[in-house]
Length: 313
Ligand code: TXA
Ligand code: MG
Image (cartoon, rainbow, N blue to C red; front, top):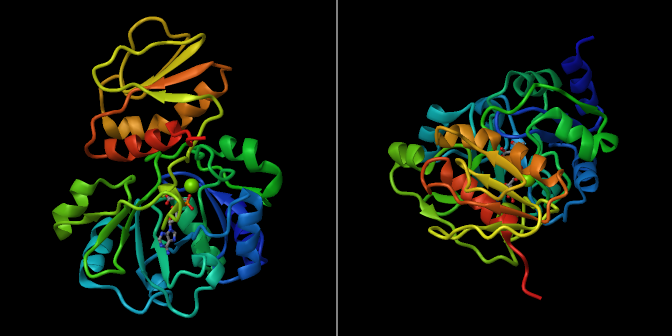
């Protein structure tokens, strides 16, 4: 029996399977089985107020999860599915409340990865999956990352190699009259607005987020991470690490360059793995330089700000 066949059986029986997508690895369970979905929250140690994205193989499989698709949503779906785009819409009664944390809306996407699609098809189930990391920590972009942090909590980890996009999907809500960007991600706002015109940008409160990716502190390494304000010379402190698009000035013990040629797509693909490598080096401080705030740079900066956030005591 193939690995995917075995994994599909696990999903059907209510188990947990970590699987690759083009963005990050997901921790999947049968979205229509509330007990299986509960196991996701338990494994991630995730507060239950965080709703999950439901992964489907195509729009037909999504149709039963919602009432209807507004025209602009259909335009995006046609252009960008499979791909790093999640659509939020009022849910049908088929979707268990635990999936949406009792919100009346459900988030759906079609991942662009052959193993993910085959897993969904073979299991015959929509698969609810958050990123496969313990809550609040750095998202996994390889199977090895998943094995290290959640290996003993899942029934199986499917290995599809490193994720090509490297940051989570872009989330657009169609619940209100106008489309709203809830989370910048692997599909740029520019590409989206090119197809459907202006999209509002959600600026929510930190305490009651509509998406935990909106929590001020998120995607955090254990090592303190500080952002270098634009135009300032970074002040290293003890053994410091550099996380930036290109080369740093001297004085850093460890250097992670996201894209030597300054390509934001390449930078996104390297981002979480670079942050993890720095976190494993026992540094006193990670100094990170924001990247240009355009295209996928917006998603990288969003993660950097949250990774650097320290709550005021
Ligand atoms: O690329 C991705 O989106 C990855 C891969 C595995 O598909 N998944 C992912 O899931 O990033 P997660 O759980 O780490 O982040 C999902 C985000 C959360 O911020 C959550 O609050 C938001 O989606 N979300 C899910 N359902 C929602 C809903 N009904 N309304 C608003 N936001 C929702
Ligand atoms: Mg996550």
